[in-house]
Length: 183
Length: 198
Image 1 (cartoon, rainbow over the protein chains, first blue to last red):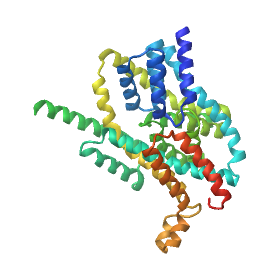
Image 2 (image 1 turned 180 degrees about the horizontal axis):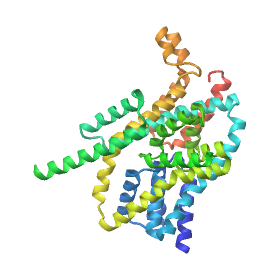
Image 3 (image 1 turned 60 degrees about the vertical axis):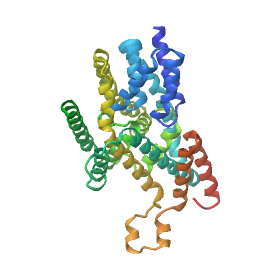
Image 4 (image 1 turned 90 degrees about the vertical axis):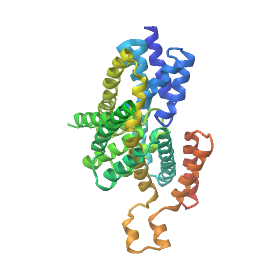
């Protein structure tokens, strides 16, 4: 029981102190879970973070569920999920309450305009980071460009593009394995 | 029934959001266009708020939209919806992972979806840039009729483009934490407002 409460509290801290979403959480997850608690080894955490990014959902949430399940069973998974979710849930409720009072003030609008200009940069940085990790073969850039054309110009729903992308990815992957084995 | 609507919409978003919160932006954008829960401006504001508040963007956006549409029960419905796919999928993955330890295959799967994730993030960047750079009430189409430097400045807000360029350099070339860049930009926005530039 003590361990499960400790899971909740650890992920509550991770959820409270990471600004800017999943990628920003990775160093904190490593410090808390691997170094401080020693719950999981460095090698394992690399796998867990890889899994968290390969499946749908936020990285922080996925890794909280995986680590919680490993350390504390199903209730551990649920407690970790609650721990990582409750801080942002509560903060956003307060922000949402105040938002409508402030957002139409012209100086607040100007501040938000400047901030969303930085958000554009953050998205570009994220795109560069994703591009660097896996887009090394010749076919990946084409998949990206075709996906962009389909979503932006043809107006196809992103969900269909995602599903086709997964199927295509697996076909290419299987093709590579087959070729690797025979050749 | 708004609560069920919120729950199901965010369940769908949670199920298909590869690449974390940023990859979710085009999905939410598409949903909002069809049910008019939020304006484009409000959604861009929520993305900005998500960058300034702790926690994953997915939770922030779901909670905010849910709260706006249905108060605290709405926020609970949307947030529950967005995390349930993660909970189910990760528990299933855990089951297989611990039995087979196929970490190599897992690492391959990331690369399978990455080209699409990249497209989704680029689309999110274009979406936010469109809202930020283009002056309210203007459209790129306005440029086609009369293209000149003055019409370019009328349609695009040069101040926001400069802030993006400078912050991009800061983020790429230094190790400043993004939250500092964001807060700095907020202060800069206030100063520029009183200087009559923004």
